[in-house]
Length: 550
Image (tube, rainbow, N blue to C red):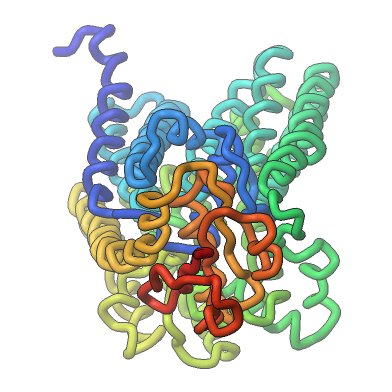
């Protein structure tokens, strides 16, 4: 038998082990792959660490704050990348630890070994495992959202310090990604419910002031300073998030409403099948009791209702916001963008945990008719199965093996798995879910390793610059000659490799006057225009050429 102090060490030890395993399975990821997403977060981290650059955009800085130490601890880009993966693994450890604390709240009387099994199975959910191999904000969003919910539960029965802590954590969530505004509103609504039931107006004001202060500090302080340190060329940043009005514009037409509805259905289909029904089993467990919602605070459903308000509003709001964002962007026609899960997967951990703790239950079968209905709704709007970026839908392993067969085969296979989990014993059901989650992660990481090794070739010309020019040298990227997304995306690869150089967008004329290092350009035969220019190299995979002055 374990002594009490030994039992208290278990969650810490398991969290470290979980993080170590995730680091190991992503160990062959050789560098960032998704530009400009990963490149932008790394560029923000470099700017925070004291290395100005020219890669300003609309990506938020919260995750970059966490990985910025990598640029202090190492010099070479590959070493920096390895440290980023270590930090990601630590963030995964916090996800595991947060699940452990939440499981104690959900099932305080459950045997320790049963809780540990449930937490471990949930932590295998592929979105959190595979994202540790990317420099992406979602690796931070999941643990910070978990600790936001834990702080919220703590604040329900406690004083001002707990509400201040809640404001800090939920405010930092906004620093990580703009979709967190939905979660912030959800926590405010949950706070209103607590105030109404418990007459705790003073502590609620503390929370509102702290949350508002965190958002204010970010919007008018950190965001401004970071952008200022990432615009060394003086050119405008590259903004990619649509404005609020533009995001809502699809609701002004019947066609737009149909597409938004289809994209919502696509997301719900993905979570119904990808989680083997746990998504719905968890939501049923976390559904507020509407008959008891406004009853006196002495009823024992109060905490459950308060928690459910935040979860449901966060989930529904984020799904709707995601659908609106991708509908408003005309180019967002890849299949994964129709069933996009990445924004929502940062906040489903409590839902999946509640679901796994309620296995076995026949309620899981509701996932099948819901998935059928959602498949029919969004299938009527999509136009074929275009190439897929699997990081956005990592739990849909069916697409790897049965892409050509399409959604109805995926539905049949997913429904059969849900049916099996519903009728077998708890241990077998948990084993099936663990295998499916792990299999999805295996398929994705195997693909990611191959793709990242190929993408690493994009570094070659920038690495050659590191070998031949000293840090601090002015290096130009002739952005006017980059005509396609692929061509312009090389700027983010080069920006990371040359983080400690004066790397910036420029024109040929400006480069000739201001820069003492090479120019990366897509204009061929530049020496025909200027005999003083000398070609020193060309990038593979459609990248630019490098020119220097004789």
